[in-house]
Image (cartoon, rainbow, N blue to C red; front, top):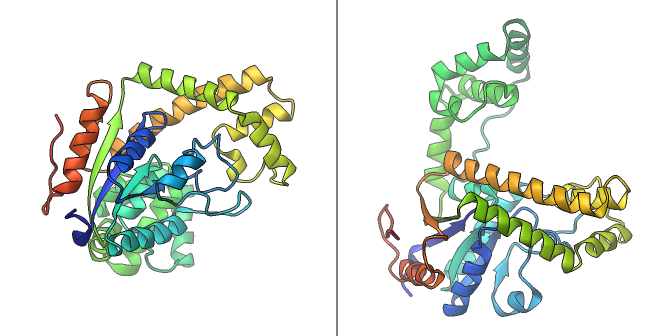
Length: 324
């Protein structure tokens, strides 16, 4: 295999329920040198297996997975910690001559790997107070318009009412004399330790929603409600970030008598479908150069074969080996 020494990372992403986990596992079964790095914000938690759709224990024993079961549900975990740990793991996989594949649906986690986080200068409390006062007097749009003139690139990525982020971007400009978009790009180029290609999986919306509904039913059949009961007995309170995750929140409310089982399951389906829609919007707006594959229009074996070819003959320059 030729790609490891060149630190070429393949990223597989897509909305929940699209089928990316199955594809990554089948790919690893065909190519034993593959190690999978999860980019899922819930699979990091121990004991939370059914509701996070983790691969079963036999798969985890057969195929090396990283960033799964690394913290207890009571621990706080954020994108900065993820970025630090995952980047180290990816580089270690390269060093050992194996093939890392980053696979998951957490856009922030994936973005933190391909665009290393920019810490920026320290807070300027006095300047923040000035900006906050201006927002009170003239409204948030006044600051947003100011930002648009200084850094239109950053402004295009921020909502006009997101006062916290607007103030931070203006603060960085005052402290450094340079726009945060420039500094982020510079930091990303300097800190990135590998090249990457991104393949995104999608499906027809109705088909994806049907798959999500079936997956929720499967989770319930496999004991998801019992899993949440066990977590509660272990002392993991429902107000933990982990227990507020998709599915866990609805089942906790069912166990508290707020919802019937049927209502909780229906809400799980609805919220998961909404989440999938938000994921697709995020991927399309926040991550560039995704090569999208419609899994409703291409045979799975063909997908596997083409990804295998990408891994064997990873391009040394920007661009993609096209699928369609």
